[in-house]
Image (cartoon, rainbow, N blue to C red; front, side, top):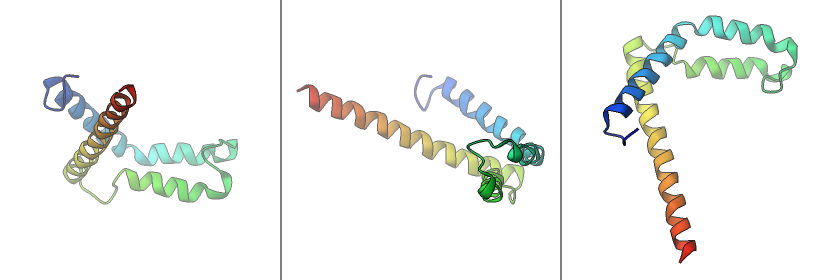
Amino acid sequence: MGGLESKNYKKFKDLTIDCFLHLRNDRNFILNILNLMVDASIPNLPLEDYKRVLSEMNNRFLPNLSNEEARARFTVILDESVKDVYSEVLEYFHRFNQWKK
């Protein structure tokens, strides 16, 4: 995408945040569909623990924040995760370079 300061990355980031906000606005619909799927024995939504899973999923939509607060918080989350991935990639290449020597 051209790096963290590029136009393409900024566009990606803006679209990702907009997508999150759209999904967030429909979170009750999404959670209701998942709730209906509990009886289908989906492996990642265990019957005995589904209330906790749905509660955690709901919390990830930042329901107690306004849209602007959610936008700001999701921006921080996105920036932190990109930095973490970027650090992992740099570490991988560093190890590869050391192994190669």
